Image (tube, rainbow over the protein chains, first blue to last red):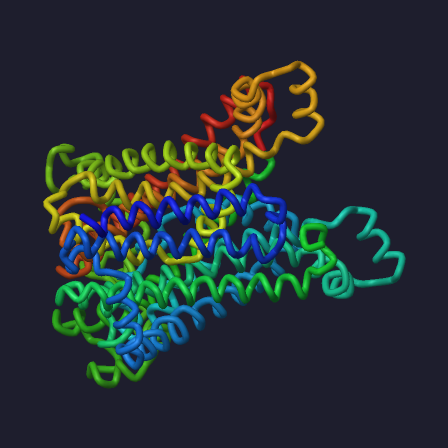
Length: 280
Length: 306
């Protein structure tokens, strides 16, 4: 009972500090802006821990954060092996293949207005479909190792990147294109000097959507067959053994990897599209 | 309408590619079967055939090509096989039959819609909270954005099992996943939409001496409608994907996800393919439905659909 009350006090205290910080004079400081969500996240963790202990929730249903952290520390080699198998081999290679394929098709489609008008609706239509359902088919075709995961990921990221790139390549005004023509630039000249740079904000939008899809595709595809390593494999088998702390540790790794991947893309975007209004 | 012909061309191109791909994909299986039936096949041993690619084998045995389109257990079924299977399981079967895709579709669709309704409702409420409370904006919003980069879908099977162990079964566990997946697009879209009125419009309301709730109902909420619909279209397809994935590795016996798995495990690729296409059709139908509602609503509100 004490711990339930303590949980409520911690929650109230965290919220009160945040109210003070958010409505305080310095609330627009960068440090405060980071501090507030950090306090919020920390309060959630502490309240979670206290409630799990106080109500003696079965660790099979919801493990305490402390046991997940313990698992993170002790299961390092397993987590690293799974990370390499699923994210480095499956998700990343599929992401690169899908991105380059989409990019290539977009540049080809861009040469003809007819193709562009056909590809845009079909592509955005395909992007909304449950493509992850193709996972069992690819596992059957390409075997259970990372190649089949890469294929699922490649197909999943293909359409968002394609649609965004095609739309981006259209995003120049007639006056800009005319200017390039007066400079004597040919098709490739204006593509590389004008239209590709102008398309970059769109392309990065597609690339950023793709980062989450890549992780989802790689993990979900492993539910359909994988070698005895990989995050999806570990999640589904640890479940069978009721080792939920390991499952949560895998999810933690996936979350950090997903955020890092997204963050990396945002960082590259900032460096490349520094000229765009949204970055200034 | 101007893009109808280009779209049809692209679709025809995709189907054409599919038709061509069927031949080399199934050639090895067809050749093996033909040999068992006593037909002369070049090269004559399975080991030698394994050496050849599907394309080379097709050139060596042109008379076997028609068989690749009607093979019973193909690696890649032909479009007409999928179409026939879908016709059989959607239109020819009574919808109460366990083999009817309409029945399985409803098993998937019901939790999707329930979850979508829950997720959208909660998402709108949280968005209102975020717009009106500085604390919530500062503390919850960053986590809402970070949570977008987490592969939540990977959690789906786990949530189902955990809830199952607590005695919660049936429609509800799948709805939770569907709700979660539609929740965040709606939050992010609605926050953007509720904040879309510019300073001049807000000032105008102040000169009218409008109260906070009047400002909400007659300015912020209408202004957020286009954003809401954009989010709804993302949310509904995310919900459907969530429900399907939730059905996959949890031993579900009905639903699109279960059908895909059954076809995979019992060597009936047509069942998997039909379920996959039916799921795609359902997703497309739902998105199109929301597109229609969007157009109608925005026109009634005097706005142009994006």
